[in-house]
Figure 1: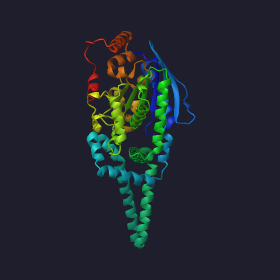
Figure 2 (figure 1 turned 90 degrees about the vertical axis):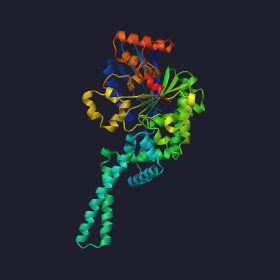
Figure 3 (figure 1 turned 45 degrees about the vertical axis):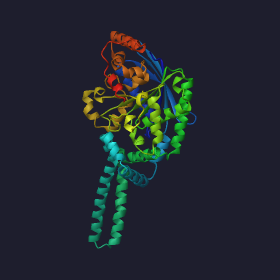
Figure 4 (figure 1 turned 180 degrees about the vertical axis):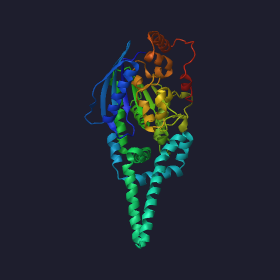
Length: 432
């Protein structure tokens, strides 16, 4: 029941910042985690693999009555993402517009809207903002053309000059407001998701295959008690594909020794799974839904506009597995309970900040705590099934910790528990 060594395999989402910035954030948040729970957590420098596709570091965590060692692998895609973002502005704009309107006319946006209207609004945001910027640029260009006409400049010359001005103004707005709007990044994300869903990114598929082999090798050689494959944001469906491909290569993957858990947080499965062309991905979901040797925990938050909430990754894709279903366990996360009240009103409107809270340190002790998942002594399956006990072990006094450990150990041994069910148990039962 007590984890002494855990192996985390973190699957990077569509984020160009990559290893350097992620590691700095992780190290900073680890310090906050230590201060919140008054424990000692030390981390070493990342070591990059010879092919540059993975980076690894370790964390040693010591509390009053427990200590753990965490091996942490970061699976990298930032070179592929940065290549996308280096594309010419106009290529990105026109390609993303073409894809968006195909999504509209094929009914995919409507399906997004029915599944989670906030996400549908979010995916529409860059196109609405692009329209406003184009409208403003057109207004300035029209005024310029009108002025040239008043000066007696020939109409053909005036129209050409106004068109050139429109392109220059809109291009400048897109380029120089990117740090505040993220418009080009979001348009690139739209293009990548479409092409990935339609299997038009062979370099991504090849890397996912290599990461599946990496997972198999790790499961066979690791002395950890559990291996947790973490997928945040678009890493949720990337992690799902990695694990499913590994299972197809080695059906006994989850039986070699360490318990393997897939943890998807802030996930957005429908942006791949709702495409008619994504049958392979839906087959991956079906495989994981019925696989008894794997645990899958899916954490969602209503406050995060970049994930789907509430959404069942299996039933929501029309996948029927009947009584064979055992995954995922869906866990709602309330950020209001994690963030200090004095910070929450500002926090809730910072959409990217909200989205990344899934992988950042808590401001208040809570059963959902990414760094307790990474560094704590409780297996992930038990943590999600018994949140009260998990919180007591993290933040309670000696008596509370002793009570919590006894409850966890008796539950693990299959001893009948006459207490009231914990608040997350009904959530796990909502899987069907």
